[in-house]
Each structure stands twice: as C-alpha cells, then as structure tokens.
Image (tube, rainbow, N blue to C red; front, side, top):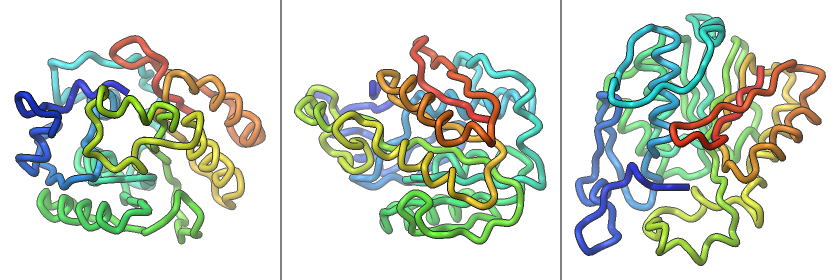
Length: 248
C-alpha cells in the first residue's frame, strides 16, 4: 500500500495531515486524528471516478479516471443507500452522500473513536441522512429495508509486512486499520461470508484490495455469492495495479 497521498513533516515520518489535524479531499474538509487512518489516493481517485460516471461532474480534473462503465449509474439513486464498512473518518460514505442523489449513508466501524470523528466530519460538512453503527463488519444485524450498495476499504496488508511499517511510513496509524491476518485477506473474506448470510443482499459490492490477493478474493466471492451475482470485475488503479473488485 503506497502512501503517496500522505504528506510528511521534513526529516520526520510524522504525517503533516496529523499535524494539521485536517485534510481537504474532493473539495471536502475532513478532520483527522491520530491514529485513525488517513484517506489514500487510490480511494480518492475511485470516488472521483464514480462521481464522474454517475453525475458527469469531475471533481478533480488533475486525477486520471479509472475505466468504469456508465452502467454503474443504475446502482445509485434516491432509493439506494450506501454502506461504508470500516468507515474510519467517514471519507467514503460522506463523499458519496454529499455528491450523489442517494437515500442514506450507513457508516460502520469497530472503533468508537473513528465513528465519533466521522460524525464530526458529517456535521462539519452539513451532510444529512447518515447512520452510524459500532459494528465488526456486518456481524450485527442492520435494519435496512431499502436497496443498498456496500463499499469497503478494509485493512488488507499482511501481518508479515508489519516489520516494514517504518519504511512504508505508516507507524503512526492504527495497525488494526491496516493489517488483516497473515496474508492480508482475513477481513475481506469474513465480510464476503457475512454478505452471503444476509437476507437482503446488496445490489453492488465494491472492495478495495491488495493487488497480491485480489484474484484469491475474487474467487472466494464467487464461491460464496455465485447464486446472487453474475459479474466479478477487477478494476485497475491509476498505477495499473489490480486494486478494486466490483461484484454485481
């Protein structure tokens, strides 16, 4: 996971974004607080592209567009809500709720401090119709009756890479928001298992993943969800790495 989006203090690995306690992304200001994860450039470009595809409005023209089809427009409308699983500071859910005409944004995290920060960011940006759940992925049943889309940027770095945290300049961020099992695939697979057990399934699932594991997780998704979804599409990021899995 390259942290090219995170600015550093000169001669120090401590991120400037933490020092400033805020960052502006896609024209929205977000409060930040150590050790809650700092939003990444890969996620930012994904959201910018989604918004461009759905609304024809390009928020950041300096960024490249991912190769997303216009057919994804049909998944986002006033009858559809967003589930941001592992929301952190609220980046994904709040950006999409602000710019898209959707029903609600449900923001889930297992860290109470992250949810508190996400609520603060919602209030800062005057974004309406957001719901918050202290939840370990989808382990608690949510009372959602409308159509919904799941978007998750879960921890996906293998624990075996923990020894490189200083080289990767992520030692100040919560390790529980970065690492996921020995091979980095634990939480993503657990989420897919939980989705398979939902009575009401999402219309679309978008996962941001480690390129090293994405094919394995694609096959796992097919194993659990083959009776529900027909398409399992890998999308390249701006560095031409296999980063995103779209299931629909």
